[in-house]
Length: 435
Image (cartoon, helix red, strand yellow):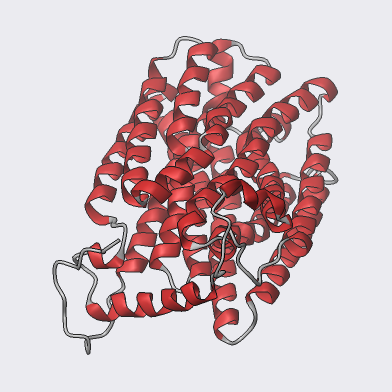
């Protein structure tokens, strides 16, 4: 397919522009909004539960419901990005989830709220596979670690900002409904801005000069040379390979821990440690902002280490191994301490190292040929969001049955151990799969 040239073509001798980094800063912004909207229910849950008289099990059901449609739409979302390009998929996804976030304000009970969460999940689903596709198109081999962590760094950043923003709106308006409307309208405005700036290819972007376009294309030519000369052409053949299952279950374990913290930590801090809305918002901000910083650090280390000559496999196995071990030990110890400050420190350490595993968003472009990256991203995120479906419900059932969060912390620690096995042992990062 012929790629349209940029609107302007500066002299090749000019320094390369940095449009690719601006696009991924925009993706960081969009994913942060994505997680602000997701986290809004968790932060507002104490207020919503009181208004609708919800049991812990029903609260867990509501926090899980988002992931039902979100998981179901992962592979279709990735295939849409492969077929139509990431730009249109990202924009329509953003507009759709902003709409469902806003109309949740009109809900009169938990059933109608559940329906809006299903719509929110379906609308948000394509954003990550499309972002993974964008990473393969715009970033070079030694930049994809930072590209992946900028893409995925919106998750802890959005969770952190969501805790402050939604808690601040709840405190100011004393209404979760107004908070949801403000968040939804802001999201739709961001979607319009994304349409204006994002493009499917460097040469389609008016801000890209010849030097930047050539720099990206030279790296991609090396990628193309490394692709298998023969491939089956059948996407189902991916599931014959251990690396794909390692990617699937590794991301599932990662999200079992991350989504467990995202959905239940506000309620845990409120109920167990008696934090009010402001204290809880501040604590959640510290925890998840630590995760954002950790993710940026992990991406920087990965790219610099690879640029210095280390193999892709060595870099990823080492970083994933360190991250999963430290996160597992930290979350295990949460159940052993009662001091709120110590708890927040341990949870911050957990998230700082856990978010190094945002580098998983390099894996689809490492394992897949260029026209299959969106599909593999969808497969990976399907695994992650199967955990999103089950973990909030399971934690709610555990808490209701035991009256304690200690067993939930053990569940999270087990997920960390699974992450270590999948990311450090099962995935072969050295070659592409011939599909």
